Image 1 (tube, rainbow, N blue to C red):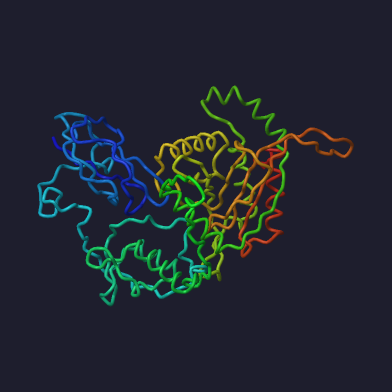
Image 2: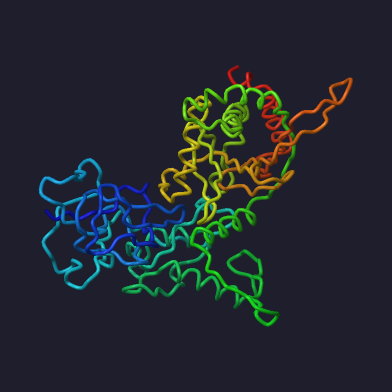
Length: 453
């Protein structure tokens, strides 16, 4: 029985690029064995086999852009063999008869032009200032060469929704861009090329940014060099950080939390943690304390809306946790931290961190955060100034705790102090807001019993 394995639900990501193919024609694959690695603008993810058997045909190549439902490969599954029904997993379907547009005809399925729906054809956006556009998001859409084509109302411009979104962020009128895709479709590469030309043509000032680029330098003239290509994730992170830094007026406040009693409590719970199979680090307590403090100071989990004329308050508390992986920095989001206990937070945090390192995070697991925590506690340092993950308005930096002498009114006592750095968007948060939030957070960490009050 031939089964076509397709891309399952990957959290709404469109055009995720194939960066690694883990099997070949003739290989025997097991159920849920990883087949390919996709990389979107937010994460890398492995696509598992939904049927066990022999690989008959690969339907993808490196660099292909895939979305949910696209074919990955064809497996010859033995009659009565193990499969996951398509109705349950969304990942397999019977092998269709060859058609004129199927891969067997020599025309890659990924290049077939979809029929645009009328409601998917919004008019080309007018030029806007990328600094104040409410469409700006912390992560730009993945750059791929194949996008669903949509025709503008005037019938002259072809571009996918991700391209239109990026054009709004850059403040580019699509009608001014020449598309290099099939049938003149505008790709993200075209937008970047156009933006670069504008920078060069305007002496370094482009689309209202007014920020000159740093000139390229031939470092080989000074001695031996080695050039290494950056991962897509690293490049996307760099663009996100640049955009946030340029658009958000940052202020950072510092404080220190006395976590001596918290550490004593963690030590007392070590045996129970081992019995549960949990890893009880300070981070679950920090996450829970942040959730409580955010409930008392909801402005710190709000976002600007309608070109800065409105403030969006969120009735949920999903907190992002920055994770350093070999592929780059990713930020998985823990859902409803305010409704979970420390044990549950510890287990979920450990699972998400492992999925991040194994490139198994889905885009849905990296969306919806209202606040972010970036911890360098395991590395060191006395403090740092984290960059706000816009459209969030605040981020907490956590450094390495150290034993310091603290005056108790009569004498200096050795106490373990955790350095905290709160960066915030000064358009929304003022010093009083941030100071009150940090004061409450420090009190919660100093006495974790306050968390249940």
